[in-house]
Amino acid sequence: MAKLVSETETAVVSEAERFAAFAAKLRAAGLDAPWTSPGPLIPPKTTAVQARHWRWSDIEPLVLEGPELMKPGRGAERRIIRLDNPGVPERTATHTISIAIQYLLPGEVAPAHRHTPSAIRFMLRGRNAYTTIEGDRCEMRSGDLVLTPSMTWHDHGNDGPDPAMWIDLLDSPIVRYLENLSGEPYPDERQQPATLPGVSERRFAHAGLRPAWRPPGGSPHHHHLLHWRWDATRAALDRLATLEPSPFDDVIMEYVDPITGRSVTPALGCYAQMLRPGVRTRAHRETSSAVYYVLEGTGSTTVGTTRFDWGPGDFVVVPPRAPHSHANGSSSAPAVLFSVQDVPLLTYLHLYRTEEV
Ligand code: GTQ
Ligand code: FE2
Image (cartoon, rainbow, N blue to C red; front, side, top):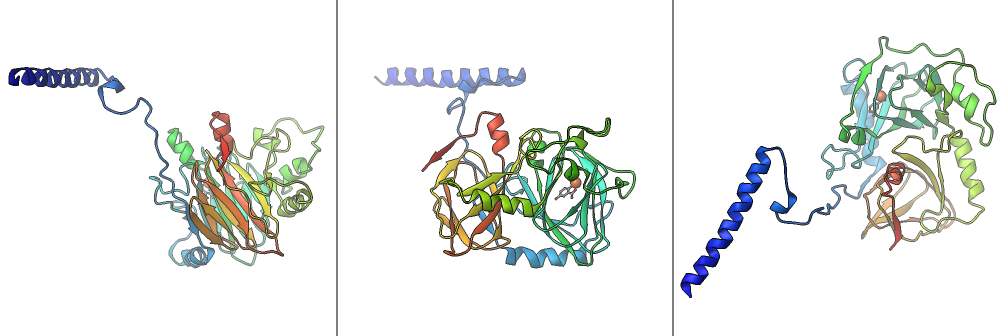
């Protein structure tokens, strides 16, 4: 008997040794056979993105402290403070979305540059602050969304009497993962703007209408809307609120290119959403991730079993596949949320799924 057992053991060891020897030969040849190591062929991976809540009362004093320590200019370029999700290796808000608050004092300029990530600005406060994109000067008022497509020259300035503050939303984590992160400074601090500001808005900001003639030539970026005004967005939400709402998001609209109907950037979409007074949405899971920013009202977002109670200026991150629902805490006032979500990218990859939980 003893002899038999030891023979079996020898056979087992030698099989493991043969696997190890084979794996070593594969490695030396720059190859790998997944069946030489334990585990399933396609091991599932749980998300590193954490459900998180940042309160505006914690963010704002730190944003206001920035100017004592940093001046925008060549080098550091932008006075920004990023949302840091501790679960994400690159310390961005989610694995696909980078969010920052940018702060610019009266008279300051954030110098012109361009880069491969697409960027979106969501204006918070200040008057006569602008972003110039490919020469089109977009004067940003509170609640406006301004698009900086990939590799377009852009500089920001504040010509008003008050400090200006806005949210930057970038797809840089995706571009980094795709190993295409790059950028360059513009030769001058600012671009020479076109004679008239808001050219893209003059051409394209009229829902249901597009110019039947455009001057020949110009940058390809001169054929898209770059600036969505808050008053139009808010009015659209009020009108949609008179019709049947989504059970999961209540009254929700996506910002789109009025000519192509596509999301504002290829990977990331932006949404404006109203939770009518007293509304509690049903919970669902989505394969996408999202960052919500509270514009108006108070309420809560429940992610998994954690309830985040929010008010104006707060941010909430919903990781991929996390069950989530929203509630307006007021029975008399609407709550309004702005969000950025990687739904367009997931849809393109045929990975977007949603299910009620
Ligand atoms: O304002 O151009 O938050 O290039 C990150 C990178 C803002 C900007 C950010 C940028 C900018
Ligand atoms: Fe930039």
